[in-house]
Length: 419
Image (cartoon, rainbow, N blue to C red):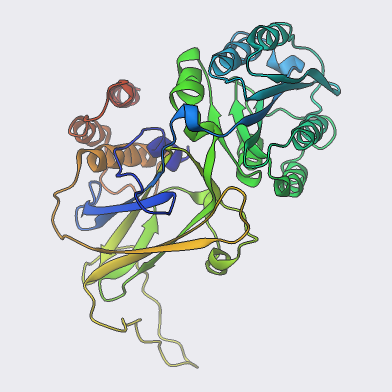
């Protein structure tokens, strides 16, 4: 259970960037619903939106796992239906190639213009599952074709569809990571779509997406495919800012302890924030990212900040003090690179805590989802969270729900409570 993925499944109504930066930071704070002595800070990022017609030309390589483990209605059959949805969105200036891999890797469709939809659909229809899984070889071949047909200033991307069960050639998570990190420098981005249940190898899929200038989504039905590949077409397939990193500095005169909710696999060392060689997450057109920090204000008694015996040979360190008596709670620093850039740019923004609980409907809903994730994980920090609180809080945040996903979440939480 990755709490940040639950929170970021939903779209929130963040203000759009207006200046030259492709990303805008929004922040708000309120009472923490699972521990009301603490404060909860929501940091939201919104990437600039680009109308589909204005998106740059795409050079797409569909990399499709056709091994035996992909046989079945919610695997290869669903991959084929998903990709046909995507083909409907292609323009004349876009190109698509199809690479398949089972026991070995091969080219199923040479690069074909988006206008030739019938030819692309026929190649998709002909896919059948069988054999072992040479994932590493498929990835290498897909990058080779993508690089050969590279569109400068375009969207060069591999779309990998798999259950993650690589078992031939480079198949360990570490080996795949090294392979992807090497190929990442080519200017080709990676979208990983996960399919199947039962033997779904989530860890490998996440490693590929995180290390390969990419993103990933799990698709279990056609409605979900439509959401990812049609409804969020730009956010899924067109990067506007890469290697997006956040560093949050808390004011010690206001904060005695803090924790990031979720993102366990995404943490950076402090020194990596300024290191432009260090890979980080990417943001697509119109994409939003949400992060929560639970904060213990100074002076609040709690069981989390440990008590340590005085040291025998060293003087006890004084508590950190602020340089000034600022009433700012924290400062967020954000670094990003343009999709074809190697040098990062920095944005900085401070938050002063309102000390009240006048928060937006989006804040309340996202906090309910974060609480739900912590209950599922049985987190040691879940405080007095319970499913009734999740459901009642989520119901106060149902604005902007034209697709019904937020109401679907409430039904899911009610089911979890019943179990």
